Length: 307
Image (cartoon, rainbow, N blue to C red; front, side, top):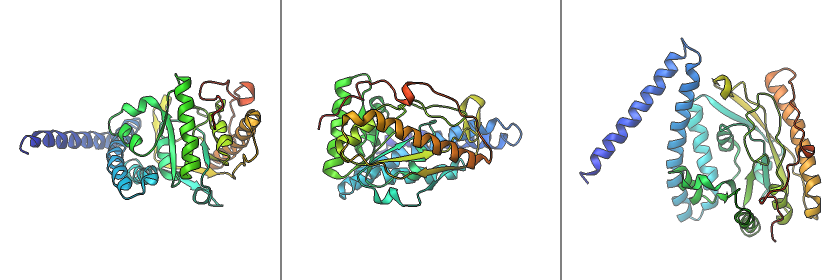
């Protein structure tokens, strides 16, 4: 037991020093505004670390209690409150028809802007829902442990067979456990200063059709006024999110995937522009992305999922 004391002392010293450094940058930001960027980055990583540790413990306890399916929801809420205390940033979710509470199972789709989308998930993530994530995250201490314990569906984008197997597992989760899935159809972050969507990959749409569950679009306003990495901008604020009406897939087949992908993207892009203009109180410029009408070329993940 005594041998553990030095490690606890080192850990306490690390957290005390890290916290002091973060507070110093917050104080400095009153004189040098750009220091707020560093302060909030440091505060965000600290909040994420505490939440990942909490998530590991919560996932184990919830599994033992028979509530393992809500592990990601519970951990997300923890991160939501940690971040508003540490950085003053939160996402305000508009869900007038309560789709987050009533649509189960479903495939939830959202636009992907920056790393701050992790907080967005913490603010809006529905119960009985799982994330998909790239397989490399599984190896990260604490965060990877939590994701594995809480039922995250890991996808190896470099391995077509592994990707298809992961998607088959997702179909089984949806059908067997009535577990919803949240996905980013752009496949990567856009980091755009203005509202835009990258071309959509088709894996999420194949998944929804194979499982015969509705697609529920979730649109987040462009928040470059809150976080803009290239400009070293990281401000406190509230970012609007809107949950759109479900798009049914009953009776659709693989032949309908391209059209379903295109129409879903159009609906989301239109709402993204409207939501951003409301948030900023002014008209916005809209970058144009030309790629097969917004539908990305097929990859291993986009191939038809076996029923």
